[in-house]
Each structure stands twice: as C-alpha cells, then as structure tokens.
Image (cartoon, rainbow, N blue to C red; front, side, top):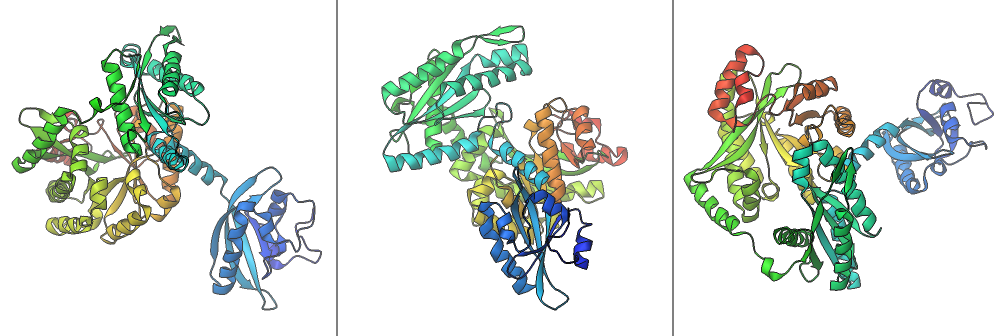
Length: 573
C-alpha cells in the first residue's frame, strides 16, 4: 500500500514523517491533504485516495467546527497551535492532540504540518477520574455532589412545568449491627445489594444516590401527591425487608424513609435534602421501617446546636480553640517534610468538640473567617519554631474553608500571615476542596492566580470525592493533590481503590503535581503507595495530630533518627 496519497515522488519531509510514531498530515493553505503518513492512512482506513480531502472531514462531526480557526491562526501567526479532537476510524473515534505548524515549502508557499498524538490512554484516565468524582466507589451510584446537580436540574424543570417532585432520604435499619458484627466486607456487600434493589424499584427518570454510610437519597420527578408518595415509599421499604443472602449469612434489615416535597417544603436542593433527612431521622425515632413526610413540627435545628453556637462565640473570647499538627512525611525516607494544621476546640465541660460539629456552624454564622485568619497566622508562626528545631526548611499546610475563599478580604489575610511570620510563600500550602473551586470557577481562577503570585502553593484536598472539571484542573495553578483516605483505607486489597490511586498518581505525574496520600495506617499501604510513585504520605502510621509542644519534642527526636520516631506515631489528639 503506498504511503503517500499523491502519485508523484514523496517529499523529503514526507520520508522523514514516515518514521514518526504519530499520525502525520501535510496540508495546503486550504486545509486539504497533500500527504498522509502510513500510520494515518491505516488508522483512517479509507478505501478512497485522500489527496485533496479536507482534514476537517476526517474529524468527528462535533469537533469539525474547531479546526478551521486553528488552521487560520497557524497560518497567520506562524506559531504552532494545539487542538484536541477526535479522528474518525472505521470502528470508532480516537482522541488526538493535533500540533499544527506552518512552514514554507521549496517554492516558498506556506503549508501546514499536522502531527497527531494518540490521547486514548489520557482520555481513558480522565474519564475514570470524572466518574470517580461523581459516583460512589462502592455502589457506583451518583454521589452527593452529582445528586445536587441532578436536583438543581429537576428544580429548573419543575419551575417550567409547574409540576412538583419528592425527595426521599432512605436509611437502612440495623446496618451498624451487621457492619460491626460481621465485618466491613459483609457490610459493603449488603450496601451494594441494597443499592441494586432500590435502583430496580425506581423508574429510569428517578435518581438514586448514596450520600454516605447506610444512607441513600432518591429524587422522584412527578411524585408529589400523598397517594403517589405512599405508593413509592411503600415499595422502597418493602424491597429492603426481604432477606439478603450473603455468603453463609441470611441478613434482615429494613429501611426508614423521610420525604420532602418541592415546592411546599423548599425551593433549593440544600433545604430539600436537609428536610428529607430530618424526616428520615423522625421515622427511625418512631419505630423504623416506615415513611415520614416532613412537617412543620420537625422544623428548627436541635437545641444542642443552638447552645453550641452560643458557646463558640464565648470560646473565641476565651481562647479555647487550639491548633494541632499532623506530619506529612517523605514516603521513601520517612523524613518529615511539613505539617497539616488542624483546628480543635477544647470546651471546659464538653471536652474536645469534634470539628465535624463546630466547623459547619462556624461556616454558617461567619465565625470561620475570624477563626481561619487566626489559624493561618498562628500556623505560619509555628512553622518558624519547627524549623528552628529541625535546622532545615519545612512547610505548613492550612485548610481554607469555602466561606474564607470567597471572602474579599482573604488575600489581605494571606499577606498579613506571610509578612507577620517572615515565611517564604512557597513554604505555605493552602488546601482547598474541589467543591469550593467549582462553585464559581472564574472567581476561583482569579483568586488562585493571585495566591500563586504570592508563591503560595495550592493543594486540592480530598481529591476524587468532589465534582470538578479536569479542564479546570489543567488551568488552575495547582501544585499538590491529596488522595482522600477513603481510597487508601482498603489498600492494597481493593482492586477498585488501587485503580483510582493509580489513576490519580498517573494524572499527577503528567501534570507535574505532587501527591500526598491521606489516612495511611499500615506498612502495607505505605509500601503499595511508595512502589507506585506516591511522594508523600500522611496518617496514623507516621503521626497522629498533636499539640505544638508534642510535635516540637518529637521533631527533635526525628533529627537524630532521620525517621518519624515512635513517640510521634503514638500521640493521641
């Protein structure tokens, strides 16, 4: 089979291009083929000669409009242009990165050289990560963030049609006993089987998501009347009452269901989900295996949360909030590279209040801006003390909440912390979740760029558990990805978690990003991650969160040992 599409002898450039591993085209100014390499013609598989064919016709229909402007830009600027597009083959469409350059031929006329690199592996990786970001790893159902996206779509459709819908929060009854008594593998199998039963009970137009633990949420478009709700919730409860056969075990669980209805109970996804969850809690409290529709007598936050909020303001005045530090170590040498800062609240009567209780309240009432500014400055000052002991450069990692990130004074706070502590900007890592960045990507890009101008490094916290666009990941000035502990917990035994970690590590390698694996608790997990190129680890294996004085003492020990000492690993918060 001839390697040139023209009858005349091949161009010297064509001879050279035949040796390339990529697909290669040479075009005239009109974008028509003068030459296609053997690899290109074999991939396209066209029985007809390609001479004179417009390159645009070889692309997937959806990508064809993208090519002409890029060709024009290459001709006008004489600078190489890049385009990702799908080239049609007999069986499928294959993603390629097209590098388009303009040059002068022997007659001095401009021609275009197009070199296409196969992007199949990269796009497969991106697709896996995209799925990982929007779906629960255990059940393959949509996760909470994809659920919110679907909910907003249903709300928009309902506003146009005037038709209501229901949100059902479904909690398994007795799951904890199964999980604790028979072990996590049986518990996980039960959750997968429950998800399958619930999915089969619902319509294709409904959305079923797993939002954590043993809780599921269903969006039920067009289901709004009392009779419709009773029928659907009855089916959901009934499908989980039949026994589950798992290995040698016959397991009985039930389900409690709480329901909120649009627009009667709320007109936004957050309120509807919260009210459905409150109704589900009432169903569990009043007998289980039943459905409760939200009503006004369930309104209002629990009294202890109101009291806790009042106590928080007092705690700020009394200095009850503390900072703990968890080491981040080199996966190969075990040497401490830095610390993540974690906020704690030591209440005079309640003791240590879990962050999961007070951080959401602080985020809601605005205290998080005050606490966050204090934490950032205090952490930077503390790092200087750590460095005085270590006699070398370290870094400090600080979590930035969504409300902090959106505050127009945040950059001033950042400048103040850096100036006050005398820290170099690159010694400060600011951890931000994917969800925070995707609330307003345009604003996020602007703020991140200004943070990067101050040399601060940006880390994506809990990577893979939120919903982000990989295109934005490429655009944002990101330095670090932190693999969430949920993907580390079952390593090295879990094939799925291993695939996810490998995909993140591969992505980070191609984007020149550092990776920190969170929640590392065993030597087997550490060895698995180290073998696959993970640079840094964080977790109970190498150090629990600890007060500053304890971290300083343990850091002194590590100077001589060159590894994390036992004292550091055994400290409890």
